[in-house]
Amino acid sequence: MTKNREYIERFTVSERIIHILLFTSLIILSITGLTLKFHETSLAQWIIKLEGGVLFRGKIHRFFALILIGVFFYHILTIMVTRRGHEFFQDMLFKRKDLIDCKGLIMYNLGLVKNMPRFGRFTPIQKIQYFAAGVSVVILGLSGFMLWFETIFMMIFPKWVIDLSRIVHSFEATLGFIILIVWHLYNVHLNPQVFPMDKSWLNGLISKEDLRERHPLEYERIYGKDEGA
Image 1 (spheres, rainbow, N blue to C red):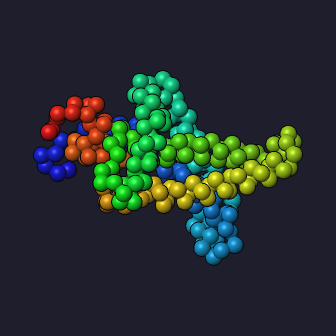
Image 2: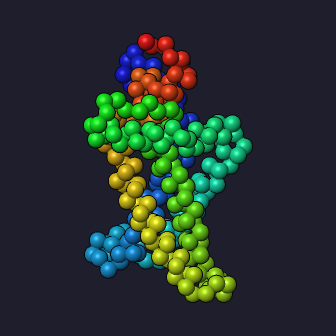
């Protein structure tokens, strides 16, 4: 860390571990799922061999699906029973100001205004990514569960329901992979504000200077408007 810089905790150890488990499971699920989807390509066949064959690929896919579901329910539990989790979720909820900030952010990126909107603990982009990930996990979990126990569900639902689940699962997985690699990767690694990487996902820390610049309303909530002036 740079000397003479004061840091505060933005993410706890458990939050960082959950985040690592989340993106690790999503990446492996994407790889094992996409190789099956595009199994006719030479690249997919090579990856399937690395995965131990088609059958073992399925075991890997289901194992990390269970990890993803476990992470999801653990996060829901922390929101329900812990003060920090509840405050985290409250800060993630969309407010009217987020709509104004989205408009301001677009105008700033287009060079139509000079100043970026003043964000609180989380930006509108971070909120969108958070809830998009939550919805994606629910859709993938439900559709994947039906495909995992396809024989049982075929006894309950008509075949078109299973076929629809397969289409939804494939489409949502592909969309989630694109968002994860393109959008989230840019904001965490390639964005000029944090390049080459926002290290808070590793050490949980953010400097007071970065907090003041990137989340000024959160900075003022913690330190007051005149702190560091």
